[in-house]
Length: 117
Image 1: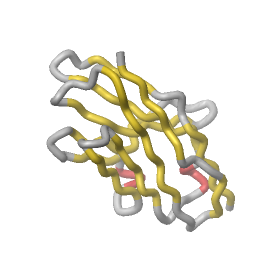
Image 2: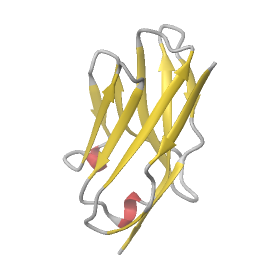
Image 3: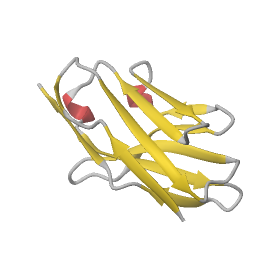
Image 4: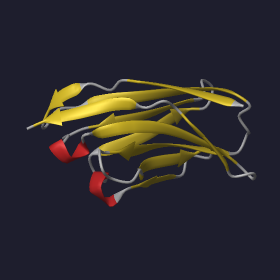
């Protein structure tokens, strides 16, 4: 089993910045991917950004150039630096860890990000 604990969500004005953190513990495989998803009311959960244990990253088009994902493998922690926030970034942000090769997903409880206009 894997436990994920997120932090950093808050209420911020448009144009502001936030940094989300997610600490993982438990049965973490050497090869894995950690990422952030978000879900706004009435919408499907979507991938925001992800980073593999080898450092490969991918981003949703809507956040490219504004968000940066990073990780500290020694601490099993992933970060999401969010700059130039927009009201449409408002959502609950969920941390995800996927162990390979099993492709099993684990989820955190989520942290709320609200961007006011």
